[in-house]
Image 1 (cartoon, rainbow, N blue to C red):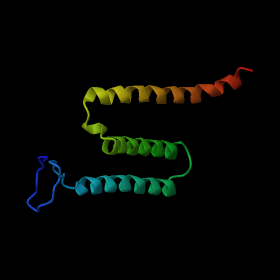
Image 2: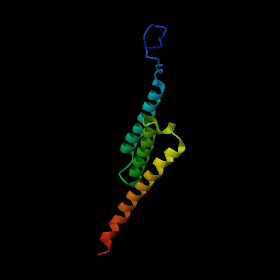
Image 3: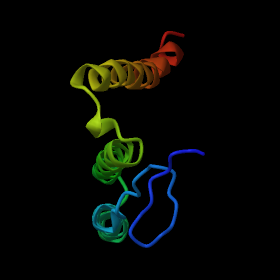
Image 4: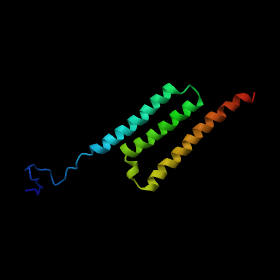
Length: 111
């Protein structure tokens, strides 16, 4: 006969404890992301089209992306070296894309 742990309610849980629900963390994450999204909507309707509006959107998108990666992919609970091993190449790839977009237009000015 197998050795199983029993709860006081008489149900067999196979020797594992059931973690309490973390609804507070889920709601905090919801409200943070909802707040940033609300700021994006306000920015979309209040600022005129242009570089400032695009820069604000890019900044808020990066903040949301870091928050989502930290919360839902549990990266904020990892060791710092793993976080930097993911973050540094991502920054270099973003820098490369920006450099290619900025300098790519200069090829047409050489003619």
